[in-house]
Structures are given as structure tokens and as C-alpha cells.
Image (cartoon, rainbow, N blue to C red):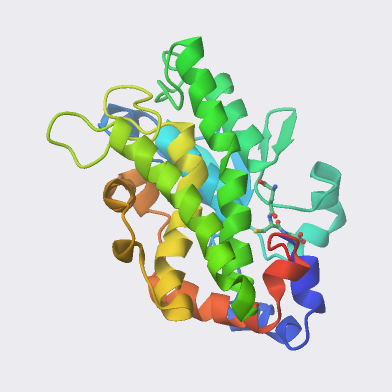
Length: 295
Ligand SMILES: N[C@@H](CCC(=O)N[C@@H](CS)C(=O)NCC(=O)O)C(=O)O
């Protein structure tokens, strides 16, 4: 998703100024707590700790891809520094382009390693900070190679959901509306089936690919959640229906399960904010221009 296009879009350049708060920095870089958090059931990096960060996450709190890595980092429980980027400005500066020539968030710097592309960054974090290692990290992946492979298969399919969502949301052609909605529903139903299949006795849903460790979400859940947060907030205002209107009860339960998790909860925004932001984006055909919505 390119803010280059966003800035080129008429009228939005002004909104992208720090004063507007549109994609402005979320605040001072935060540091995560190591030892205390490690003891908690959900080890979440606590903002404001003086712990020495193990890595820096260059991020924006409005970017769904960056949110993937933000959640993974919080879930991991390793101390990190959150460096809020003003997209359209900071990400075009030479110092950042030297780190990531694509000028995109998320990007992380861990010692001499510079890694970008959200799904790749999350895999890197899982490998770099394995359970039992320094900082006593939480697992982001299940233990067996076959279960890990399942997580990767499911996570990589998230691009189909992303395309189907932004394509449907951006559609203005009445004749294509049903077909585009159907493509989105197909992806939502796949998620519903995975969440239902992993449900334990008496549960409405489980994690999409089972657990990474005792009760813990995997990188498959992390890959999807930011987009489901936005889908849940925007279907009703823009399309007049909600997830409750289609047969996806396990998916609806899974969204609640994610939202209740501390690592995710600390990244959530008001649904009304998404509706307002996306109204602006849709008004300038942002998702098509950025290449995430297809014709
Ligand atoms: N495929 C990338 C997409 C990242 C991306 O598109 N990030 C956007 C913000 S949502 C960005 O940094 N845009 C800045 C720009 O293109 O100028 C990933 O998964 O990390």
C-alpha cells in the first residue's frame, strides 16, 4: 500500500501533515519490558520501560502490515523500540531508504540485520527469538515442521483475502458487486472453517492453525487479524451488511478471541476511526491507486 499515491491524490497531501494526525506519529518511541512481562501469561512489551530494546520496529499505527509485526513483537514478549514513522515524510528520508529501499513499514533493525515485508519479518522474529532463548520469548509458531508448514500455507493465503477485501470495498460497478462480494465471502468462509476446525470441546472457535504453545496464537492469526479489524469496521458503513449476516460464526468468535488478547488489544483502534479514514481513502480511489484493489 503506497502513501506515495496517497500523497499524489488530490486533497490528501494536506491531510497527511503532522497537524492533521492522519498518519502522524503515534507518540514517543516506546520500549518494552523484559523480565516482568516474561512472567505474565501473555507477555506483552510494555511501553515506557527502560529495558534495552532487542530490536527497533519502524512502524505506523494505521498500517495493517505494520500491525502484523507490532502484534507479533508484542506477542513475543522481547523488549523492542517502536519507532513511529510519519508516512509520506519519514519513510522518504535517506536514512530510512538506506534501511529499506522500498520505503515501507514495517521494517525492523535487529543488530546488523535489517528486515522488511511483514510476513518475512514475523518469520524472522520467530526464528531469531526461539522459545527458551534470551528474554524467554513466547513461541509464534508450533513446534512440528508439519504444523509450521500449515501456518505458512494459511498465512500466505492472506494476500487473497487482502485483494478480495480492497477490491470489493473499492467497487463502484453495480454489475460487478455480487461477484466481488462472493470472492470476499469465499475467503471469509475459509477463515471460518479453519477457526471452527481448531475449536476445542465447547469452544466457538480456536486459533486458525491451532496453538503455537499453550493457548497461544500463531503467525497465521497475526497475518489475518489487522485486515479483519478493518473488515469488521467497514462492511456495515460502506456495504450495508456485516459478518453477522453471513454464516461465519467461528470467524466472528475468532475476531473476539483475537481482540481479547493483550498483544492485539494494545494495537486496536476505534472502528469509527477506520470508517472515517477509509471514507477518505475511497473518495480518492486510494486502494486502486495503491494496487491492492483490482479491477
Ligand atoms: N508487502 C508489504 C506492504 C507494506 C506497505 O505497503 N506498507 C505501507 C503502509 S500500509 C507503506 O509503508 N507505505 C509507504 C509508501 O509506500 O510510501 C508488507 O507486507 O510489509
